[in-house]
Length: 120
Image (cartoon, rainbow, N blue to C red; front, top):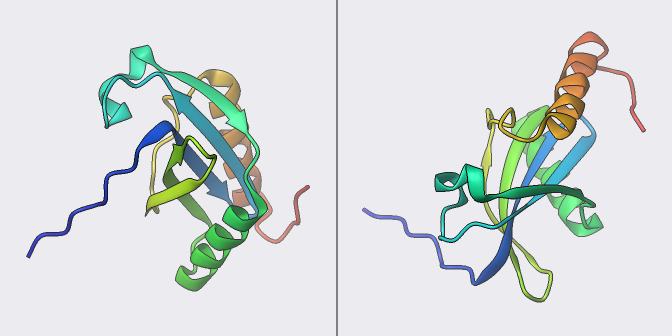
């Protein structure tokens, strides 16, 4: 059996890292190919807002699976639609620029120290 993913005509990629109730959506631009992971040095990373319908859907996903962390990958098409590819329950984020990585790392540490505290 084979499983193939539908091709998305995308203008950018998005890695949405979720820690507890905090979401860090990073738009990834500059990939000359389909798979951005082959071109780290050619990419730019920008924190962006998560659309409310995407935020609700990923929150529901994590709740169903009992996860406090998820790294969701999306393709962004020219009309602004986010196309979901996958959720990595142990996805990486340390290759982002320090300003982004630091925020995620601090949120993970805070969540581990205070798992029941609501965050802004």
